[in-house]
Length: 188
Image (cartoon, rainbow, N blue to C red):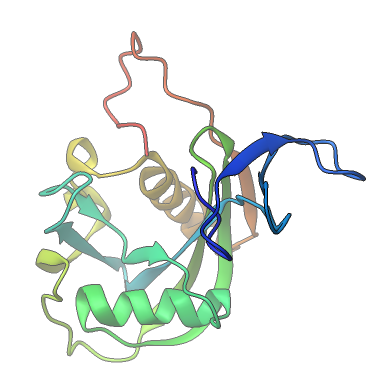
C-alpha cells in the first residue's frame, strides 16, 4: 500500500499506539489501514451418495475441480456467501446448510468455511465461473484434479463421516505446502 484510501496522501508503516503490529498509517490524516484475512465460503452439495463439483473456468487452478466456493462479500453472512457462490458457480440451490469444515490458512491470509447441504433439486447448470458441473460418486471423484487442498480434505472428511452417519464440525490448520513435497494438491 502506498497511498491512503481516505485522503490520497502517502502512507507509512508503523505500530500505532495501543497496537502491537506493523500497520499502514496515513502520514496526513492518520487513518490506520488494517489488512485482515479473506473469508472463503462454500458448500458441499450432496444428492444421495453423490456430491456436486464444479470444474473451474477461472484462475487460479482453471480446469481443476472444486466445491462451489468463493470470497465472502461485505454485508453477507457466511451461509449467505456459501449459498450465493453455489448459485453463481453451479446454478444450484441447497436445503438447510450445516456448518461442516473450517480451515485456517494464515500463510495466504485466508479462512475457508464449508457447509454441508442437500441439493434442493437436480436443476443445476454451468455458472459463469465453471466449465462443467456434475455429480460424482465417491469412486468417481477426480482426486488428482482437485483444485485445492481444503476441497480434498472436506471430501475426505465427508466420506469418513458418512460411514459413521455423524458430521462433527471440523477445524484444521493448513500449513504452507513444501515445494519439495510429493503432495499433488497445490497451494491454495
